[in-house]
Amino acid sequence: MIDVAAVARHALVAAWCLMSVAVAADDPRKDALARWTFGPTGVNASNNALEPVGGVEFVELTDEDKVASVARGGTGWIARLQDGHLDAGPHLNLTGDAATVYLRARDPGGSWEGGLFNKRGSHEITNFNLFAADGRIGGEFHGEALALGSVAFPSQGTMGSDWHDLVLRYDGQSIEIFCDGSRMAAVPWTGGSLTQNDQRLLIGAETVGGAVVRPFKGDIEEAVLWSRALTDEEIAAMSPSR
Image (cartoon, rainbow, N blue to C red; front, side, top):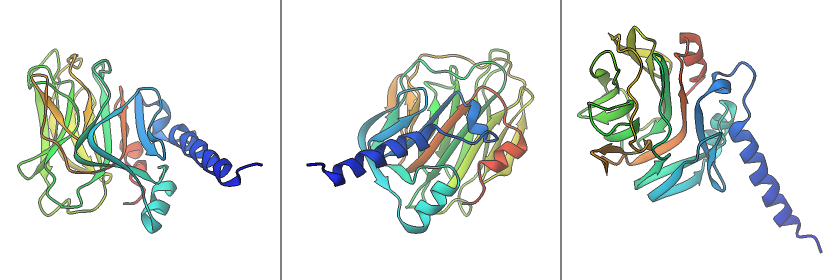
């Protein structure tokens, strides 16, 4: 006898997995170096594995949050981090003299503190670093032609407990950080090709000297990397609505 409920569950899982990698022809995600979303079976990785470590729970959004997620190209699922993080291993680096880092996240407590999305290790070998610290949301790159470049904007009174689309961009001439499609801060920086390292690429924490530190307690919906600078229009397209 056919277990109709089991068949339906398998079909749902398959559908979520397809949604996690399928993007429209004009979606900037189409040429991403790496993209991670979540679903009923955990992490959906387009081309790079991502392992949960410690207190990580995969949660299905409900009601308006789920509708909004699917409408903007998400899956309707998130990773909830509580003293845990997501680990992509040491092998993936952003390369060249242009890059974009995207993270959709929220902090239900509104404190915004911890490592968000990075391949760090130390200031001297950082590949990229998107972080929350000391009342700021900031980003860093280290280049072979110049030391560390960084940019930040105040998180207090800006972030709250809402979902936010955070983008860190390096175009060879400057480093810029965006929140929900709006440019929040920019600094001139001609760092050349980005420094490569063998540190672990993490979401929801960061590394210092190989040790995992500064866990972020919050929710992650999507993380994407490009080895190119997205245009202003593409960044706006990543934030159709909050």
